[in-house]
Structures are given as structure tokens and as C-alpha cells.
Length: 320
Image (cartoon, rainbow, N blue to C red; front, side, top):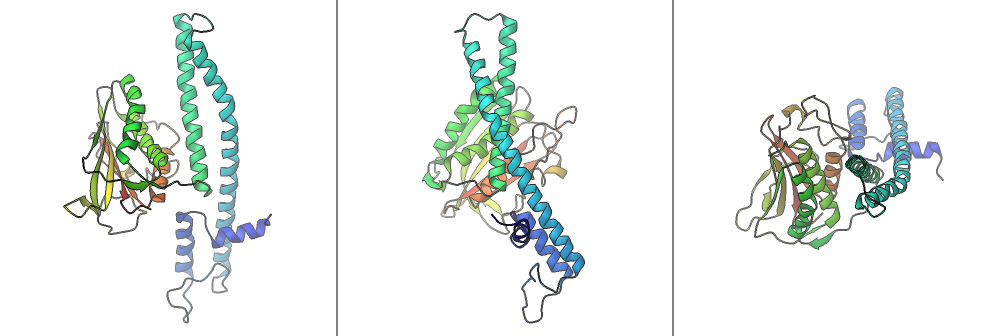
């Protein structure tokens, strides 16, 4: 087992995520001149070129990364331990609601239904956090195969229609006739779309509408995939299709423009109900972003306050 010092040095030289790598590179770039015999090469973290103060900053950053990693693993273990007892509670709720052990009065039925709703919500949160932990620690596996995106989206639509009907929100699926088979992880894309639908359902009022759509698109890659802006895209013309665009749009109250960039960050919650209180753990969109980036794709949001929201992502025909 590697020592604490070796793990710290490894975290410093090989930060776990993109933001960490950018931060380390930025510190090295701004505080230390490049050696004249190595133009265009950033000095390493253990280089004598870095002043002692900045070495300490980098080491402190590495320690912080290691602490975050340990806490993420610990919380994931705790969340995993909750799955079994929660499944048992859910099973008993379903058994009692079925009426097989005996009849229920209206008060008892309502109490069990409320319990079941909250158990289901807790199960979704646990699964969401376990997915986040797997992504954060690099342990999530991808199974990319050539598949039919229309079938994938149809299954998700059928799962969510009853939940939307309960809230009196219409849910439609619109897929272009010319969709081509593409390489993707079937269940990971279903999870992305489910996260977007859950978000839409939360913030779309009764009587509202949500659309899932898929169409061929031309992805004009003008920049890196790390941003969230909608620039660099236009509808596919004849012979130009190189990607598929999937969109989840709603008629909710929209997202304030100042939040459009950060809503895909970890644990960010946008206050969008009447009391101004956020809902959820702030992981759904962060997980969606990471899963789409793992496919080599791009995800972004478009919205105006009071004008609904539109979340879109692109998947390349060539695959990840």
C-alpha cells in the first residue's frame, strides 16, 4: 500500500479531475518562468524553479485533493450500506399497499404511500451519489456499443410518463426519422436523460409540457468540450451530419442567466421555487455533464427567466 507521502506526490503530479489539472497548471504557469532550454513546457511540481511558497501551495492543494478523495470514498461506502435496509422498507411498503396482509383504511394507505414516495426519493439520491463517487474516483465503467438511440429514449419516455401524469404535466417524445445508429453506453444515456427529466418535472408547474427530442446535427467544434455554452452548433445540412442532438425542453419558470454556466458544477443548486429554496442535492446535472463528456460529447443549457428551459447534449456519430 503506498505511503501517505507517495499518494500526496501522486495527487500533485496527476490531479484526479480536469479542474484540478487546470489549477495546478495555472499556478505553475503564472509563478514560474519556463526554463529557456524547454520552451512551451511547464515546470514540474518538484522543480527547483518554483519558489518555496508556491511549492507549499501545491502540496497543500494535493493534501486537500487526497482528503476529498477519502471523504468521497467513505460517503460512498455509507450510501451503499443504506441500500439494503432501504430496499427492505420499500418491499414491506409495497406488500402492505397490495392489501395481501389485510385491508387498509384510508389513513393507513396514505401514510404508506407517503413513506413509499420518500423511500423512492432516497433510493434515487443514494444511486445518484454512488454514480457521482464512481465518476469522481475514476471507477465508473463504460459499455459503448452501436445502438438505436430512438429505442433508448422511448424506454425512458415510457418510464417517466406515469410520473408526469401524476403531476398533470404532459411529456412528449419527438425523434427525427433519419436518426442513425451511433456508439454509446445505452444505460448511461438513459441515466442522463432521466436526470434531465427529473429536473424538468421538478420545475414545470401543473398544466405544463416537457419535450424530449432527438435530431441529426452538425457539430462545428470551435472550442474544447469543457464549457457549457451553446456556441459551435448548427442544424445538419445534407451530407454534414456528424452528431445527434438530444434535447429536453420544458415550460417551467426558467433559469436566471447568471446560473447557466455553473448549474453543471458539483452540488450547485439553483433556487427556482416560490420560496427561493433549492431542491435536491445538486448532483443530477453534474453527473449528466460527466457522463456526456465521457462519451466525447457536449452538454449545455439555454433559458430565460419565465421562459422555460432547454437542456441539450451532443453525441458524435463516430463515438467517444
